[in-house]
Length: 297
Image 1 (tube, rainbow, N blue to C red):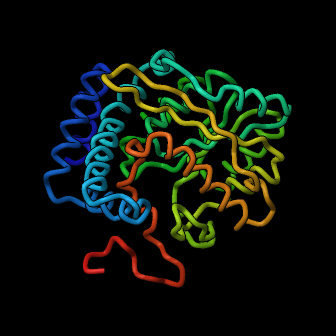
Image 2: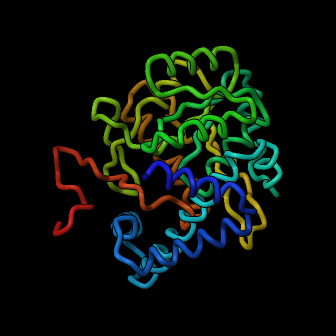
């Protein structure tokens, strides 16, 4: 029954225009603000941790905006995945930092593109692959019924999609050696402690992947960050390219992870309400410390 409901929801959402999808997402987000739920609580915890200088009223406003923006992403994605890549590319209205990308490409090395869970990362990925050959590392969704749609949507612009296992990582290195691009979601928490290190993220220790640093170092790749900022009133999206902080290719995983998180922070500062603050970024803590998301902490 659950699979059928998910499949039905995806079919309905796939047929919506961008304006309708965003209106529905906004409604869902406003409901999430009013009803007790884990996403709201997680966003509250994350925003309190990462922005201690905000007043209680400002934190509340950011939580509400974040839940609405995250819901818009969810309602937009089925339509993006189910349509040709040109649909997503045509939604891009402007681009900032293109000189950053051009300088990275001018190195004539492979290109590593980090696209955090900010704005609509599916738009960012499809726009990037409209510019150059690309291999995208991905983690399979929890709901298996969504995987064929995800794979089809993310590769509709010609990209190769590979899992973050040994074979997929090998394919990523090969792409970089060919001078092509590799895309990765840099703010996903590793599944195991051995796959990451604890590095500062908005002043708090967060388990951070070492994979991006290894790819940059061993693959001798240039590194940029990319995001697709959602414009108001369903006007489309603005692409941003940001230079990676110094040290992201360092052989020391702690140095590289710290630089990675600074790069993600720089992206978030452009449109903080569009970050996925409902993600439990600090679930695993150093030395087994209590998760901040547990009630009664």
